[in-house]
Structure formats: structure tokens, C-alpha cells
Length: 167
Image (tube, rainbow, N blue to C red; front, side, top):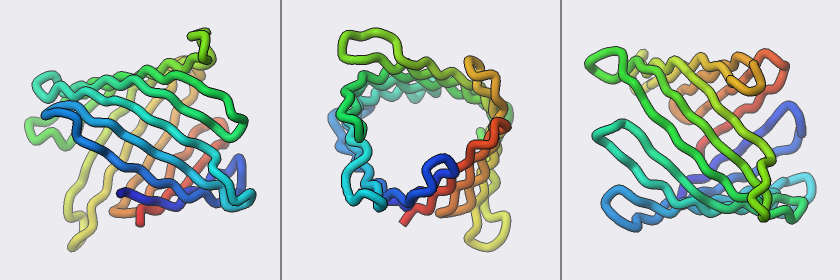
């Protein structure tokens, strides 16, 4: 099980996030994750998603359900495609999209982004870094992510930010 501590600038509450991936087939997995908001001591999100990977295409798709703290059930449809720029695959462009609908399949939110990703292994002894510069197409907002081993900082030009520490 993967666990992390998460803090976002919009909520100012610490959340404990857990994720488990169960192999359903050679290129398919069931991903379950949940989150507990420490300010209220209750789950703020529970989700299940089936993900299918297409390694030859450097792509994946997913379909799932999510229940948030307002007890609203939503369906999530997502896809991602990578385009390596270097032969090592350490620098590339990712194109990703996500559609969130209510239980009657009415669109609630659509997210689409393009990002430049650069992975740097052993920048110092036992220290890996990943940098992403992205643009959220529908919201028209640039964003930035830097990940160093267990720490991740996400920020976007509209002032939103969050930090995550993987346990």
C-alpha cells in the first residue's frame, strides 16, 4: 500500500492518503484509494478505478467511480499518452485528459493538459528529481511540479498549490 501526507493551500488541512493497486491482468489493474481529512477525522474521498496500460503506445486509460465528502458519486474517465523527446525517455511531452460526470453521466468537469516532463536520476547520490511544466487547456492555467524522491510540490499560476510527502 502506498501512503502519503498531503497539504493544499486551499484547504489548509492535512490529509492522509492511501492507495492500493491490484493486478487484474498483465496490463490491467484495479486502483483503490482513499483519503482521511485530519481536521474532521473522516474520509474525504474514496475511489476505485480500472486502468489499462498500452506500453507499446506509451499510453493508458482508466474508468472509475469516486465518492467525496459530500457523498456525491461521480464517474471518472481518463487517458494519458507520452511522447518521448530523448532516446532515453527522460525528457518527454505528456498529453492527458479527464472527464468527470455525475451519476446520470452529466458532465461536471473536464480537464486536459499538456506537459513537458524531465526526469533527472542521481542528481546527487540517491536523489532523483522530476520536473514538469504544464498547461491546463480548459482552465488556461500554467502549472509546475517538482518532485524529489518522496517530496512533491505542485503550484499553478492561479495561486493554488499543494505539497505531498510519500511515506
